[in-house]
Length: 108
Image (cartoon, rainbow, N blue to C red; front, side):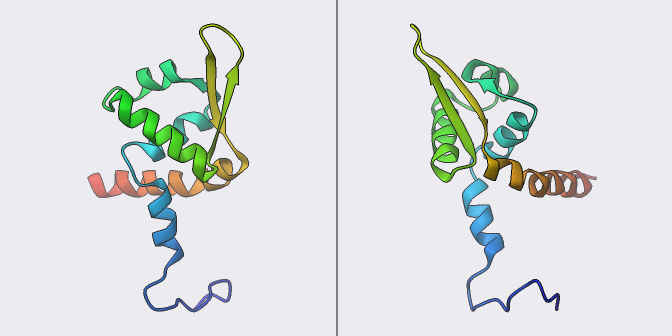
């Protein structure tokens, strides 16, 4: 076994922890879009049209609470809100790209 990996405890796997944080209706997709740059809510709606407003808002809130994205609110009327990847979001991006590629392989 690779020396960088600890022996897994019974029933506990860091992969499961990771999946629990990014699972949800389009959470990974949101992160992949934000890697391309800061986005406003309306831009994300256009980029991910198959998710409801309620679900998109919920996922953005959960991603922010998990530390994967950052939300910036500008003091304007109406308020301008922008979303961007945090340092943690940037660090997990390569994992999501690998999962994306694996998904494309499995689709063939």
